Length: 99
Length: 479
Image 1 (cartoon, rainbow over the protein chains, first blue to last red):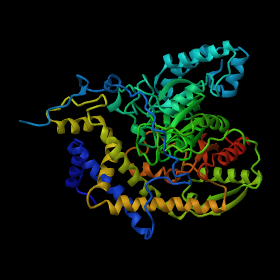
Image 2: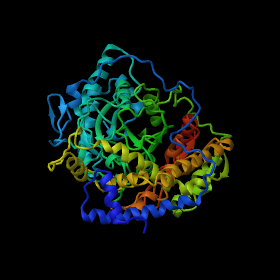
Image 3: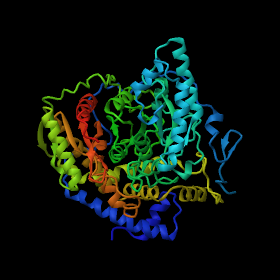
Image 4: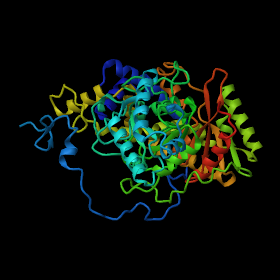
């Protein structure tokens, strides 16, 4: 067994996911199977290989730079339009700091 | 007007000959798409106001004798992970069921600048995570070719819309095969361009180092035309490439004589007989067209699924952190504390597959596991990219299957996530390397299910990919 229900609950807490007991049990089985498949990576040697974080191809050094030109921002009203609970131009959330 | 057999060139000719106006076309196309939709559930919603307004612009240009854009009055369907200003964009998720984007994706903006009519948003797996379109919060899509089967995923709605004829072309997104696999399952052309060729601005992020936007169409030339419109540098996406965009339709002359094609042995060993037979028959066709076929080896292929499901889920766990109940429409009703708001919003909002991937991604990035999983996978990714680079020293293009099998039945694989992940085996490698790749229909099984052939080329060598696909398409093997 590669992962326990306790680990599943720990990872769920890191992920800010509320899971039911049933979901925890299911995810444990699923993740166990997936991690078993992933273990095959140990078969392939990667010594001396540079990790690849992004797609690389030949390009000029400045290919991703753009001129720094000011432009109109989205604006508060548009940015707030999808807020579950807007208020006075801000996103409202439950109280964070208790007195 | 026969909406289902419209073409980009045909629409232009009809507009200029005044056989119909753009507004007439938009009205009929919308009516047809709405009437056809209950059969497949390909669209999540239609955007008549937007399509009609774009059509009026086209008609004004015609009235004034102005030149028409390359996609004048072409009905286009857009996958619902690509944002459209003022048109609800849900990503197939309950979390975004009411999200109305305040801006347009660059690809959408460019389509409309070229005269296209955005007629609706297509169904997809939640946040583009899936290979069958069964992970949509708004119900699965049925394959128009065989209604008891999946259309593939995650761009299943886009592929189904094009196959059904309700849109002439569509936009999809591809992170591990999400354009090519549904294209092959539905019998249409699907293109994943070079990473960075099309701006990702406005594409809801799943795995940023792997995400692509690309076209689906009923012909290679039409896919090439759409790519020509949406490709190119965009200051709003720092990973978009500055390389000039060629005319992708220019080299479609049928001449592929002397092209060296690689046939990777790792892609052919697990094929069900019918898919394998069709691929081998296509390879024979290409030989007859004058291509030189060489067997090649891409030895890291066997590790691609493991590599992908570490990297893609790691990136996804981070990208999906933003859906926390603060900014994006949905918030749980149970929110006594801030932490409870986060947990309950995400627990109630995300579907099973998203949760699985967030969990896996968080696990592989968590303390103690980073080196063993994430770093190792990044190195394996380099080996996969190196395999392709080595192969392209010898060959001009690689031909391979898109999927090990044709469209499977609804429900057939949904309970077994690993079986579902394994169905991406031949498509994820192209995404990991960031090279252009596409699916072109190469025939049907005895049961009438479409099979796609995949073509992969060097970074930015879409012209060779399109030339080969177009020459093959002209043989008429798809029917």
